[in-house]
Amino acid sequence: MSKLLEAGGMSAQALEDHPMFDLLSEVDGHREFKRGDIVSGTIALVGANELLIDVGGKFEGLLAPREFAQMSNEDRASRQVGDEVEVFIVNPNSTDGHLLVSLTQVRIGQDWDDAEALLESGESFEGKVASHNKGGLIVYIGQVRGFIPVSQLDRRHAIDRAKVDGSSDSPLARFVGEPLFLKVIELDRQKNRLILSEQAAMRERRKQLKSDLLSELAEGLVIKGRVTSLADFGAFVDIGGADGLVHLSELSWNRVSHPSEVLALGDPVEVKVISVDRERNRIGLSLKQLQPEPWSTIDDRYQVGEVIEAEITRLADFGAFAKLESDIEGLIHVSELSDEELAPGDVVSPGQRLTVRIIRIDPERKRIGLSLKRAGADFDALGLPYEDDIEDRSADDGPDGATEAPASIEMEAGSDPADASEPSLVAEPTGD
Image (cartoon, rainbow, N blue to C red; front, side):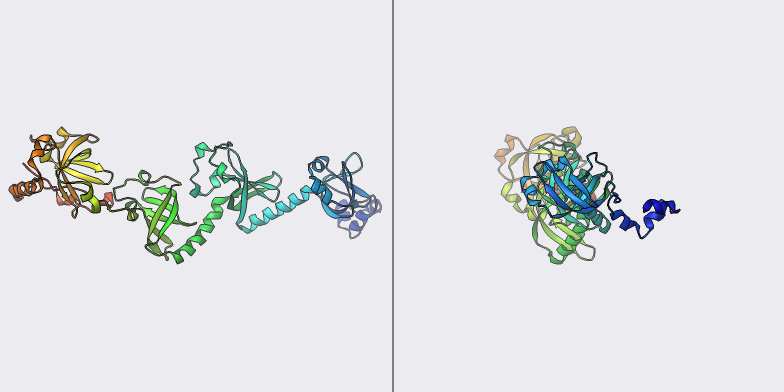
């Protein structure tokens, strides 16, 4: 009949559009199939080496031999004659007279549909990592293989890309079997390409988590977190899906030039919540407020008259600064460097380790006075007259000849080093 319609002057396209076409295609010998079609059928035979499916119109589909061989015994046993199934047409022109069909490809097609729906909606989903390779992680949506490039992993993982490879020692190996929140960001069914992103999913999730956290957090709360990124002005710490900032001034009681001096990406930390700005969605955190203020225990660690080792950190016209420990510096006044009138640079240099004597401790003003010239054993027999001696020498100097360090160099411990040109801890000077 189709030939008669064509002979009557109808084009092929007009024939397909004709209301009789669907009926004609169901008539024996007139049904046409093409690769990619998904059709309904009924299982006609489950044999030891083959599975036949009646797809109507006296057509039978043969399950692709490779797929049949990969079926488990349980899967084969679950297929019964008379069961209705959907199959994917792999080859409509098989030489043995059967259509070559696939059951698996139908499920994969449905999985691609699900992935496309996720891409269109922008919805996040949770997927379990199946494996990894030298470029990223593998996550399946149903039976469709999705790929997460290393660049699309969330920054909180602090992945060292230089160490990423396909081996069991790769930093990606720890993700296998773990669930991740993901978004579909690229899909090409024809190229079998499905790209996923944890970074995109967590960006939205973090906003919501931060909003929830802001409503629950209170100043003074101590919470555990992990360092996610470092910047010149401080470190960001994930405290439960949302980031808070530990400002440079809150990293340590000691002066810090860059967060990397104290922390590394991925470090687990315990922080104190010091501010919650719900209007600006900001969380302020502190590391140093969970540490003892170094000057509060200075008298327990050092005594006037004690001889110790110190490292020269830098020089000034009025003397040299020396580090006693990581968070304590003292001043060797120019008059305590040598009996001769020499510039500090003529006596000591930065990085030099020297033996010095503590000649004054002032916890309230956060100052330690040191002496290089009085560090020798000859001064041990003098007992501990150092503080009185300093006061007498300062008085003798008077306002015109005072040797005290300029007031401009005084600042509280822990303040921003950008606010002053000198160290935060200075000692009151002495003179001969």
